[in-house]
Every structure is written in structure tokens, then in C-alpha cells.
Amino acid sequence: MKIIETLKNVWKITELKDRIILTLGLLLVYRFGAQVTLPGVDFAKLAELQSSAAQGGLLGLINAFTGGGFSNASVFALGIMPYISASIVVQLMGIAIPYLQKLQKEGASGQKKITQITRWLTIGICLVQAPAYLGTIPSLSGLQSVSQMLVPGFPETTFYISSVIILVTGCVFAMWLGEKITDKGIGNGISLLIMVGIIATLPQSFLQNAASRLDGGNGGFMMILIELVIWFVIILASVFLVMAVRKVAVQYARRTASGGYEKNVFGSRQFLPLKLNASGVMPIIFAQAIMFAPAYVGKLFGPESSVGQWMQANFQDIFGFWYNLVFALLIIIFTYFYTAITVPTNKMADDLKRSGGFIPGIRPGTETAEYLDKIMSQITLPGSIFLALVAIFPAFVYQLVNVQQGWALFFGGTSLLIMVGVAIDTMQQINSYLLNKHYDGLMKTGKNRKSVTA
Image 1 (cartoon, rainbow, N blue to C red):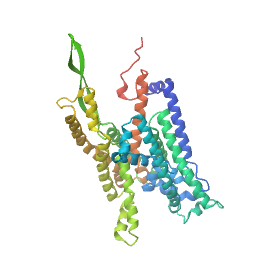
Image 2: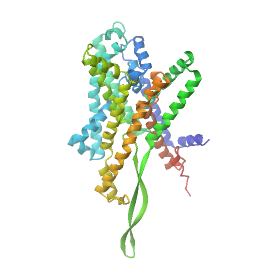
Image 3: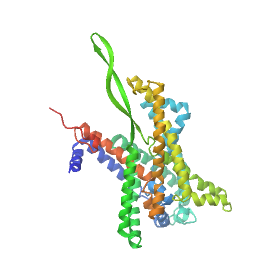
Image 4: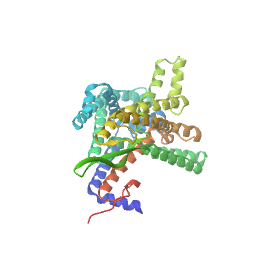
């Protein structure tokens, strides 16, 4: 089969093979760390926390992003999410703070300083999240205090101090693993760590749902097959969302010498690809972070407040109507916001002008920037609606097909989009290595090179 031949070609390229092996090794280290429990914790006391996380819901969503480290009280319990939060904050600050704007324009040296700022901010976020996490474990495990989840004789003060240090170190180490994968391995390291953590919880969620179908007489094999078909359809829709582009024709003029003088002649026609979903999964991550707030605000109203009770009841249920309605609206809003700050149409127009390119019928410069901005506005609306529908589709599956909450999370949302996006990005990098060595690529666009050596 052709896919087998392609995989053989991957291992013929020494550099690519070494990068893949290094990536798999570092991912294995991360998965091993997610199973190592914090010193002093009695693992048996966390049974209720693990059961709640396996059932899905808000806790299951958090646990999925840490690859099970959250429910295991592991050294990687915070996962890589503090780094993601720090990156988002730095990106947003770059809009308003002149110093960061200056660094963004300095190229590699400026990016190095921005990375260093992000690292320090990650440590600051960890120092806030680590004590909050340690204080939350007992209530999530059905215990009254931290001392009840510790092995007998282990001092509570020692546990707090050592665990905060270990959790911060674990997050920094995970961040280092991600950067090493990006530099020395294959794919985007940070995204791969998140994807591996999500995939780690997928088999257990599927098996639990399948067992409930078979044991409870709740549809049997037929319903399992229907669920798998729906799942593959959603994966195809997610692939379309990630890969879809609007091609804008661009004409390049080239200068040639003819008869002792130079003149402009038309060059090759190319296309400027504008992605349907230029913001990726960032709008979902932004919206997800805000959706934690309503339930917390509801608690501040007190147990006797009807408003507080309504907010807690409707915004703690991630499969409820109001939660998903607000979630979808936030995703659409943040898609426009993030696309506006990440797709610099003015810079694209200037680059086209400097390189001698122009859009047929549109003047270079300001008019080109306005034209590109108009196209981005037109394609962002359907893109944002499509993204919102994929994000809230787990609620439809849970309500209509009656699957278990843990398995429903994989029918869309951030989990599925991250898995699809990271898989496509990694395949594209492998594809480029194959094409550079004159092999057929993994993707259809790569079937155009054979060895041409004489």
C-alpha cells in the first residue's frame, strides 16, 4: 500500500527520523510525569475526584487538558495551561503596550525577549494557581480538609510548601519540554503536549460509554456504530474548518531588459490564501476562560439569592442551554477580535506592494488593505458561526443521542479542534521533509515530486 511506502520513506530520512524519535521520547516523559502523585498524597483518597472527572462536565474538561494530571494530583497537575494563559495575556498586552509593540517589530531578538517575558509571567500565574489547586482538591474529593487526603504523619505545612514548588517546577518543565519539541523535534511542542493529554483520556471515555450501551440495554452495538459515524463526520467538518481558505488572486510584475531599456511585463499569477478560521482555537480558549466566571459570581450572591442560584444552576452545566448560548456568542465575538489582531491586512498590502504584487483591479497600498479587510470580514462571519457550532456540538450529542458526558466532550469543542489542528500541522511539517528529499508526501498536495537527479 502507498501509505506503507510513505511511512518507510519517513524512516529513510535520518534527520526526520531523529526528530520523530525525540518528540515521542519527550511526550512519553510528559505522560509519565502526569501519573506521578505529589509527595504526601494518599492516592486512594482521590477516588471520588477521579470518578467525577471521568464523568465529564466542567471538571472533566479541565482534566482532559492536563491529560489526567488534575485528578491524579500529579506533578503536572497544572499542565501547560499557565503557559497558554501567559501567552494570551502577552499577546493582548502587545496591543496596548508600546514596549511590546517595539519588541514585535525587532524580529528574532524581540521575539526572544517576548518569550522570556512569557516565561516569567507563567511562573507568576503558577504561583497563584498552585495554592488554589491544593486548596480545592479536598472539596472535589469529598474530604473536609487537606490533612485528610495526606498519608498519616505527613505535615500539612510541609505538603503545601513542597507541593507549590513541585507544581511550579512541573509546569516550567512541561514548558521546557514543549519548547524542545518545537526546536529539536517535529510539530509545535506546546500544542502536542495538550493534544497528547486530551488523547490520553479518550480511550477510557469511549470504553465507559460503550460499556453503558452494552450493559444497560441502551442501544447496544448499533448506537455505538451511530456514535462513531457522527464522530467521524464531526472530524471531517473540523478538518474542513481548519483547512478552508479563500484564495485571492495576486499578479506579480517582473522587470526585464529588452532592446537596451527596461520595461514591466506581467509575471506569474499566484494566490493569497486567507483562512476561513484564521484565529484557530484561540476564541474557544478565551470564551472558555470567561465561562468559568458566571458560576463563581453566582456563589458571591450567597445561597439565598435566586439570581445566584440561577447562575450556578445554568452555568455549571456545560451541556445546558444558557451555558452554550453564551459560549457560542462569546466565540463569535472573540473570533472577530482575534482575527483583527492576528491578520494584519495593512502589513500584507505593504508586503505585496514592496514585492511587486497587486490584486487585479485593486490599487496597491490603502485600497488593497481595505479590500483584504473587507474579504476577511465576509469570511470571518461564516467561519465564526461554524466554529461556534463545532464548539457547542457536544451539548447536542449529549442531549439528543444521550452519550456519557466524558465521551461527549470529544464530539467537538476545544478538544477535537486541537487534535485536528495539531495533527494537520504535524503532517504538514513531515510532508515538507518528504518533499525536500524528493519523496511523495503524506498529503495530496505533495504528490508532485520525484527524484530528478541525473
